[in-house]
Image (cartoon, rainbow, N blue to C red; front, side, top):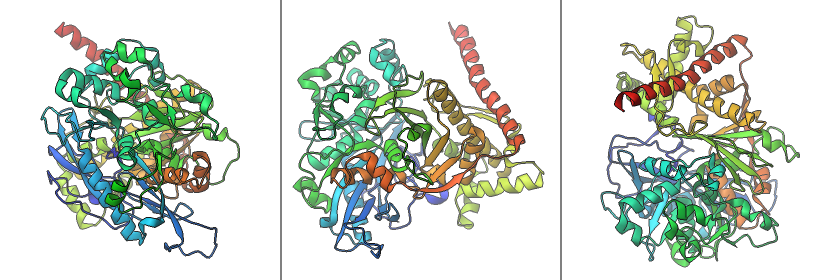
Length: 629
């Protein structure tokens, strides 16, 4: 899921990816760990899903123990990663359970049944670890990747796979089977497209839905509900089919601003969906989804954190080891949960409601999402949004992104001839691959007498679009480029390639920030979370290249904290998401850009080359198209 297989620290910190089918769900009781990486090698491999616990004391007692007691309130957040948080948002413990994934070319699939079993296993493990009784859990929130789930009228899975395997009923977010369908939809020039950067991505749901209708007619006729994964988890727990403004607005072209007349907190937040553009669905060939007041894609849509139905159903409560009726909050996409878990993580709290509009959150993992909010709707070509209330109620969300960041670093490392030797060295030193590479780069800088570590890539340049460009070019056909390859098989050369790839990712983020600021944003501060944010080199290169300070949250598992906040809001501990964020977000380290003018000059020059690499690709694409015409 990312469950985005989103957060990574390298091979030294992950489980084996070689088991094709996992009959038992392993449980880990350890310190917070990154989400398992997506690997392309086996046709089926494991990720993990976990449940964090947000622990909050019922009363503000200064002498309260940090360990749970029978008098504490606990709020549970479920994502792929596990965290147990105390009343100040501090992570206390974790538990996780592996999930299964299939990859065949551009088709990447999962099983909702497998994921639910993993959720139940992880929730029980987290409660056991924390010595929490189910009665102490007062609220639950779910976060997941923006993957597409298909179920029939009985809630049973319907295959979305060429294989016909009914278990494979989820099209994973990173699946790119629907590139042609996305192009077809974008050629319609519907007004809804202006609210997703001018075009839909094959990672969004309409192209995937169209692909299924065009290629799997039997499945299309069987599906009773099409759901985003986090909404499906909430539905599976409560039986309430209300969808989230986050998922529907960001991935389904739902127009969230149609809800602006309902922003009064005292009004019902469980509303009849009024933001679907029926003309759009008719025009792209999916008019049957309009039937029954949009029953298959969402008749009711609510703000994140809205309490769903009557809480957990008796059946789900038994499966989870919790109490029936426990409040469940409307879900968030995992990256957006990261935004909720980190956006207010400042060294000094600010009372200015506009200050939040100067920040951008980087949720860094297999891919990276770039989240910024504004009071005014800003239309930015090639960048998703503006999405009304899709993350923070009453703010417009701008969402940039890079489809392969952690996945790119994995690929660069694993495809190099020195990778096996490096992995053995990392294992013998009991460290991660990334930390070992960082150490090698430090040694190289000293031995070669480089003025600064970034200068090691003087002759090595990378364009990181190995899985297309999500933002701000929005070109799913873009390809990656590595310039400066040699026959050098050494670990040092691998370290140089790794550093160039890290820099390329940071140049991509700089491109997104500059593009957003050129179109109305005023971003001057970055906040980073996710597995890659734990990599000191990765963060320092971003600060130097973008020229902004980067704030790391006190608790790096911000996606998990954001999910737990949904449960706290659903349980009415806080009146709204913004209040909960201000109470529970907290800053950790602040990384500042280098003050060395040579570093800035160096990166400005490499950034120029970075931008030219894509333009050269366009020219080369045109030349070859003419040759084949």
